Picture: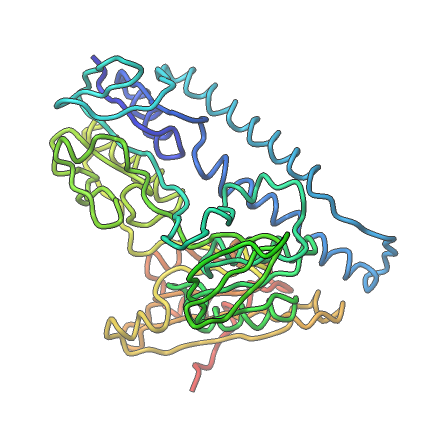
Length: 446
């Protein structure tokens, strides 16, 4: 009998398996596909490699201002895809080696929950003291006629032919990131979203500036676009909105979000509660309403970020095998969008802070970075601190511009642990950097 059987070998499943095994538990990990999950194989890692590749367009364009003479440049997608595939295989090999060294039994196949306390896989019924579901998520396919003609975020990473015109349906982080990537590669890109602004959940000032800056880069935005159907138009594709607007492209990316990967696991049959989106309902300790069945990561649809999934997995192991019950605070987590330019945030945005009843002081910095001023590029950086006027606590830090993710990550401890604006002011700046602007804001916005 296994002490723990984990379903899903993504970031959360691998973390939970290795950690539980290190505490002496007998662990089996079930996976129907490759080991590594969305982040390593189809998400964060390959996407970031593509972001790096796209950024060379800016470097080549700006080089002459810094004394470099760059000849004719050209981009080719197949070598990048091959390098990406090699890197994900390398990372998968590292994961497999870590699992083996940890003593985790890896079971290849589709697993589902059987009778109480059992997991069925490859014709076997395996008893387990605890079952952890970490099956992640998958691209959502909305009920739009012709949606099968559109790529998902999985598919677009395997393209070998660069589309001359790319239409992105959806203005969340996946759509925004791939729009920037393929514009950098040289495609003409249009982003069609139902909302007026992209990136629901981020500060509106960042989102407005993202639209402005990406328009300067040549990305077209079609706001209020509610896709009704997709159809072929000769060798091209056409997307028709409910209001009759028509957008045509050589390829379409369906970036309308992701959905919990809970189908086919036998959850309903044993009484595991799912919400309307198929997410597993769990409490703060990741327990489902069925004793002995737990879930972490994107399949719970709480806060779908890889570090959060790993933290949930480790908290589960501490609680169930380490005699140190604990839970994760999802209230203050840094997040980033690797758009071009990138943006990142931690804590409350201005609108959320006002909804929560805080009286606010808001501090801003809006400037053209030194590099851009020297090269003549118009792109600007923008930073915002949201401060509680009564306590002086910094409730949120927000940025769009070069190195936004790195800077916000460094500010995460300050915001998480409640530093005051006065303490920010007392911190000496590191000059010349962009990050120093967070410590030089003295006058709140009127």
